[in-house]
Figure 1 (spheres, rainbow, N blue to C red):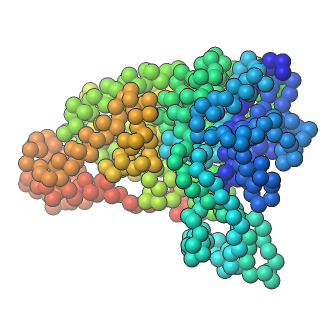
Figure 2 (cartoon, rainbow, N blue to C red):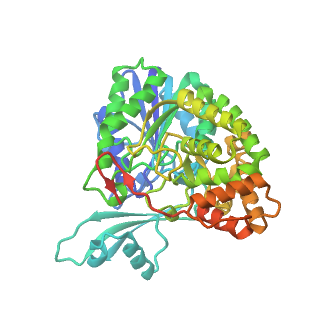
Length: 524
């Protein structure tokens, strides 16, 4: 094929409970279709979904053609033995795409579930089974009830549910497609994605953008992976309802076809404006399940060019905290306590550990000024906030949460998150990319030593929980002031170990459920 202006590669993961939403997104891409100037190519990982041929469940390559609906389109290629968690296999597919659909500029889009440093593409076995459920289970509209019923039937633990059809009222059951994902030994990580993209493209000159249309992708750890691979990294810092860009894919494809001379930064702005125009009101919908009302989700376009300035200052920031950990660990604990993990439900339901980076820094500044007045830390935090807000965050569609003043525990999104477990056990959580097994592959951690700082922070708390005898007068004064501020009005005289344990336990076990605030009214 003759070299075109653009080739946009979509990696779409439909092997999950988002199956129908992924099909809808592909239909949107097909409705626009490739043109004389732009190629839209889809790497599809899907399911039989109870009605398609077996080959439809295998990784396949599709070329979007507006003349042929996706559901009857023939794949360009089917990869029977491909492992989409293996960067080498994906590199071969990308190489095939570049040869068949060459272009001057490229863009990469992932759509599916997002996790803690990875996506939901796995190399485990996927088994589909249609199960008949009693009518009372289906009518309960409760996944826990379905789960209990499946356990009674001794079914394996499921990954997702698909309600295929509603039967007649005279029939006392419904068909539900149960997806089992077993033996998941590996997932496709952001480090893995960057590995095959970096090998296949001539850096920022050729790969204009990477767009992660999934939950929790805009972590500073993830963004740092792509710093030499692409100019702009576009992702959501918080949770993203199933549709993501949704019907906006057809708009995006048509706009790019109409104006192929779009600059790289304009593409990020375009995606964010489409996201706002097409989806923002849906997050305030009154008919949605409670978990999806007033979600306040965001989308950020990050300029990777200045990430090295951030990491240089972040290393200095970590050194300041390390050198002054005895005096500053309670300031850190206070600032962390004011940050919610980004989850759909209560924090106890997920071990996510993504907190808003700027909100954490703002609260660190607030409590440092309140308690310790470490001016070196104040200068470093101020510099980090300035770099993020002025240089990294190129464009941003902010969440619709109310904007609080630092010092209060609120849901806030400034567009970029960082991993910070609330308790020490989170550092060993195997599902998190801050665990020993995974952190060594995360470039941001190797550059800044953030996990080592967190270990020192938790170790310092543990040390003082055993004895506060060695605590210096400045820190004791801070503990006393903090306790009084939290309701311990009768604290007088010297601070003992039990006082310290009460304070740190309260900071690490905060469980009050702050309602989600939208533009119109709050939803408990």
